[in-house]
Image (cartoon, rainbow, N blue to C red; front, side, top):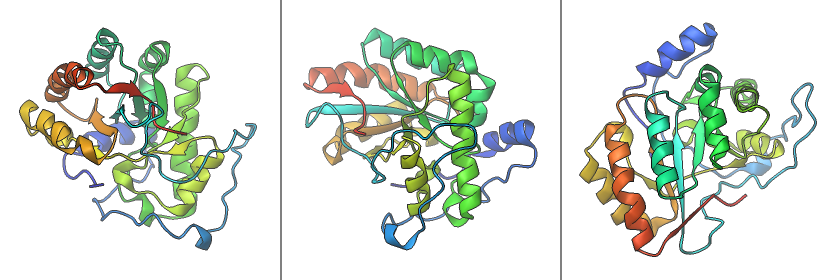
Length: 255
C-alpha cells in the first residue's frame, strides 16, 4: 500500500483554519509493517463520556462481506461540497453502496454531507483529524487524539452514527492505533487496489488500474476531496457498470 505523496497543502489550510495548533505531516514515510502486536501495551479503549463500543478484530481488513465476487468501493478524504454529491449521485444511479473514509475537519465543516452519506446507506470510516501520513512515527498520545477526535467529529456530524472502520492516512497503521480503533468498534481498513486517482493520472489510467489490479483483492481506493476529482467521477461512471457487467457485486469490507 503506497503512501500518497505531494499535493497535501490543501489539508494544511483546512486543518490550520480549523484547529490552529494541530500538528501536520512533514512528509510521507515508508509503509509501516503491520506486525508486532505483542510488543505494544493495550490502549485505553473508552473515550471520556462515552460507553465502550463493541470491539472488532484489530487486523487490517481487505475482504468483502459479499465474498469472492464482492467489491468494496472506498472513498477517502472528504466530504467535499463539490465532489461528494457527484459521487453520491453516481452511486445512487447504479445502486452501489460505498465506505466513506472521512477526515475529521472535513466532516465537521460539512455535516450536511455526512448526513447525506448515511441517509443513502453508505458506511462511515474514521480517517483521522488531519490526515498526517507520518503519524505512525508520532507518539501514542498523538495517534489516540487523531483517531478519537475524528471519531467524535464524524459521529457528531452524522447525527449520532459512528464510524465502522478506521483507515490510517497513507496506510500509517501501528499496532497501537489498530488496537485502539478496534476497541472503539472501528475495524482497521486497508485496500487492495490503489487507483492513484489522487495524482490525477487521467480517467483512462484510473480505469485501467482497476481492471488490471482487481485480481489483487476487492477493496478499491478512490478520493472525493483534496483537489479536482473530475477524473475520479468519470472513472467511477465507467467502472461501476463495467464491474456489474463482469458479475461483481458491491458490498462493504468485513468487520
